[in-house]
Length: 308
Image (cartoon, rainbow, N blue to C red):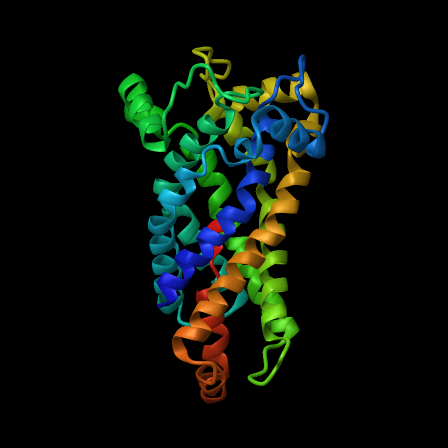
């Protein structure tokens, strides 16, 4: 039931956060010479005006499809790693999260590649006159036919560099916050505290790896329209800094941070409510009374980290 709740909670997080992600990607990859958007809120307004509200949800099928697999990997690896390490400490939480983040890149990278390509498709058009990709699966199949396995895994190294420390920071921040806030069995503010801890952990995670995410988005968007600009990660960094300065690494950060908190809040709320109704309202506190330390570990397992 924890796994099912995590999947549904993650889906709620995707629905809440995907519009912010679309804005983030558009801002990260837009041309510095002819920018379409002046900032986060102008980007929101322009997409809704030019492409309708559905424009904000372009590419949502890809994260929805990959959600179950990512959850299985993250929960399985993080839980097993914690058992192998033996002690529930903040450092072990970081190591377990980092291991989970690294392994789930196998699914995350192709999923985000398809999402990025679909988010950029038909930019500025209410109804795209020429759709290159019908959906996420069609997008990956076409990329595979044209570029092979290497094309499908475009941006894998940057995804690995982002996800490994990113998930480590997420679990570390969440563990530190839950320990600091304290979770008592009869605490009526337990759920708000849980939501706050998850939201702030998500923000901390994004801040720790955001510059890498900018480069990843640019590499995965490279080749749209048949034009390739970057030959490698170093070349992408070099060209980006030379043309736009070091502030390039903060492009889309506002929409990302605006997204991070509500996405994690929606995820945690959904997971908590599903587990509460499935087990019965009184069962959770009894478990807490029997094993306070285990309760904290249980809460950490219920937290759905793939919405980062």
